[in-house]
Image (tube, rainbow, N blue to C red):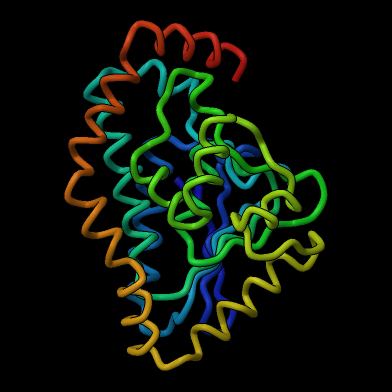
Length: 251
């Protein structure tokens, strides 16, 4: 597989996405991400996690539409389940996390960044956003909740409904990212920040993060299966399948 490359910088683990240039998400890729995260989360010598990309063009383009569009309902349901489970695991991992965004983070790729505690993005032409409504795909329930939680109801509505991609300064202004940095310093500053957080008393940090995610557990996890089924039903609707077919041909 080797679609995720792990590096260790002191007590910080750096997870680099290495699935080609776009890091498009499919089932094997997410399974490898999940296994890597689980291994790092259980490592007592790791106090924090940075997730980044091996290239400067894309952090992650989102779902691999060309591959996913051809899946059966059962196969796509498996993909969507492992995607959501990885998001849940990343949100709740009891260690500080940062997305070091060196390239575009689109749709599902943007969702992955929202699952981290902090988001540092490179300055310049690096875009983030959700274009899924244009493809007939609803914003996933978990992602919509994260948007609302991070930037507030009004900004979350505008980001989801517009289908636009936003520049680093726009992202900073809305609160979707925490810092805009020169490209060459994004990863080093992310490692430095996570190291600082990881040096805090572990039990105190873990309780604080757990408390911060309490609403997520109560509001999201209890309804996630039902909401996921709605998403899958929409994915396989005639209208969405037509839009996805056209998009997959250009992917």
